[in-house]
Image (tube, rainbow, N blue to C red; front, side, top):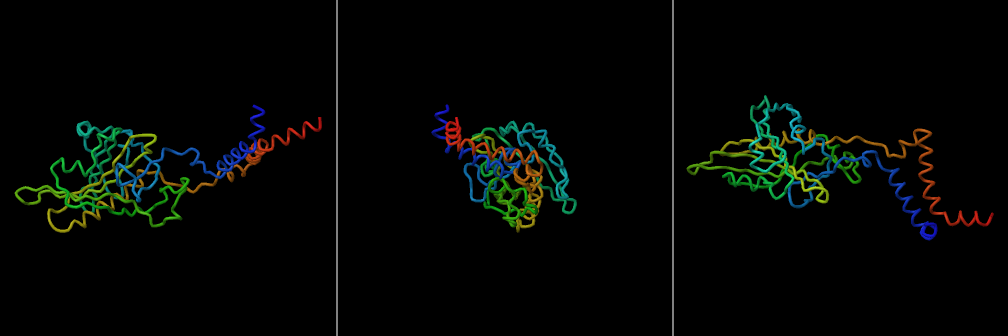
Length: 285
């Protein structure tokens, strides 16, 4: 062991020093981070619009999901009974809730669906045609969330000062059903996926907002309504970020902390120069 330490002391000491420096320059949330997830518009691959976030809710717990506020941005919500629907869809967790804004009286349906098996997951682009709908239009829409400090940047740092105009990208579908050659049901559907790292979990969560639109004419009013509602909903589901000092500044605020910083920096230096220290000791003896 001594011989190994002597031969590779510089390498071992350098690696320890790098580890200590990274640790001291990190923030507490970087060290004790929650599970990291991504908001994205595609299920099977990451797009350029994907955002790395941290969940504020436990999407894998039905009771926790039902604790999502019934009042969001002026909308008042009421739950559906989803027990039978969840079983048919193969969902592990499902929240389906009507939200109505007293100013418009236009209901918006929020659906949060999670499955631990991606093969049983039914994305809207597949699910709606299976229910008899025709996809009339497909695209994306930008959700202008007001407070973007919850978005994670490199090394999990808050990015409000880096990207002040960041928006969340959601998939947009316009779906219809017809009877006798006339449109009888027309809906605006916005959704995105909340995906964990494929290396740690196969669990996938979908967040969907939908609303009825007039059978004919422009659907812009309903699109604006669903976009606005989703803009209020997103921050309720993901943890807000606070600016944090790095560990070294927190430790340096106290005498004990200063001592800890000194010892942490001293240890790798002792390992790095161990052969020289040992030789000097041998010569003196």
